[in-house]
Length: 295
Image (tube, rainbow, N blue to C red; front, top):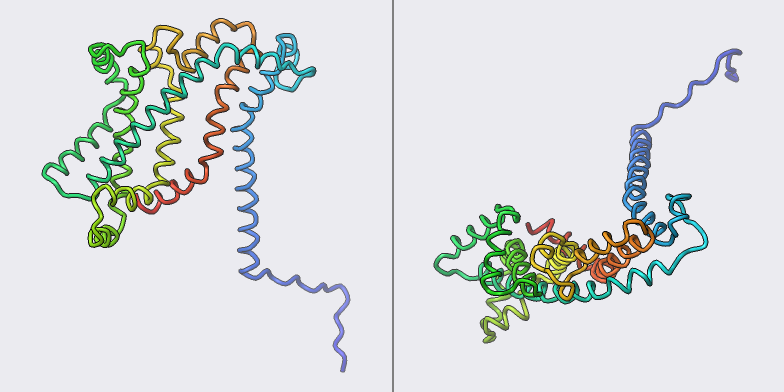
């Protein structure tokens, strides 16, 4: 006997399985998350792209089409801006290089000693460093200026370098001490059995282990020092020693009516930071990932 379906009746659709429902929800969440990330990326990069567009415009093009690319492109804005700010950029490179070398040297040695060796007053010294992190930097400006004035460092690179080192090493020592404590003690014990000195332990064991976090510290400090405006404006008075941000500020005052050269100067000033992150991005990401597990 053959079963037949009565006319007018339709077969019910199969109910979705729980696994299928979960996959659909996950697909919708991924689509929404990707859309949100694209929106955030556009909002993040559009001001940079707009700055490049504005740096290639004449004043007439800027007032007619302020938010789009206009032709012909005026590359003369870059030569005009570079002829003024190249000296400021070289000063910033020198100050940042000296400050970074001093900060990494002091902080790695201090972090190694505090993290790996017991000595009287070790915990007190560490807690004092932590306490200094709670002091806002603006409160130390006047005492710091009085100090560097006493040592005749006003209007010189050293009036920037030594305060940068003093301010940058506190958080660096805190991070490096945490990482030094995470290195297995067996490595140092084996090195001591082989007759290694303290300097050899530091150079061959401790320093290679903390290279990723050194990359994070270096990038963060370089960005902060390169973009610093307040302290160089207080310490430096002559154009000879002026760094990039005060130089760009004075360049802004001279070109308030010329948008193209002004934005070209800011674009040129940001190029070294972009190049720095391109070459250190791998080390930076390794340090951020390792910090998520060790801190």
